[in-house]
Length: 189
View 1: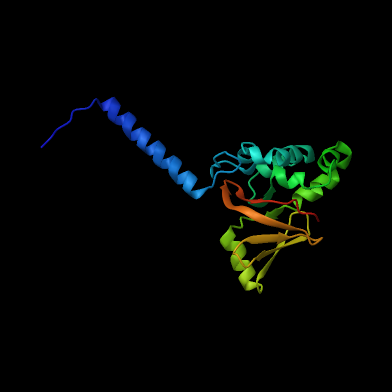
View 2 (view 1 turned 90 degrees about the vertical axis):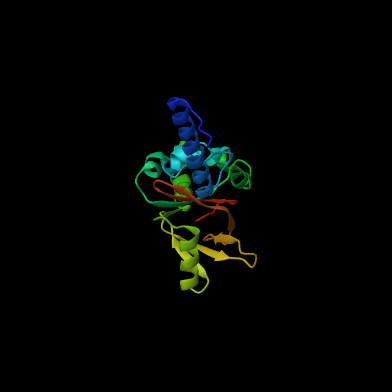
């Protein structure tokens, strides 16, 4: 029998390191990385979004619309979060125009069209779609509906009021006050 004597402090550090690694792995297993940053389920939507390098335009727009406090609140909210590349698909100058103070109402309308009350995971959306004949009708905070549907390859798409489509590229990014699903296109009410 081999007995190894170790200093109690070294054992404590080793255990703490093992717990830290296990905790980090489980967070990353539950939540995907978004924009090169870990997303933590104990943080709220804003606290996580500001760390994603893929969502700097969205964060700037949320600030310009005065929605930081709301999306930091208890919710819960389901946010379909367009990436910087999604905003870049808009006609040239659109984002610059929208973030001007005189366009705050229009910007707020567009951003709240990306938010659904409640915490809807991909499984919840799929169950709604199944119950509604293959398409889930989601009423946004803005008041109009988005339609969620699955394509033949198993991907989920949102269709806006104008017929525009956004693909959910990263689903189930859990937050303390809801869930984020990353989308590749800005939806329009």
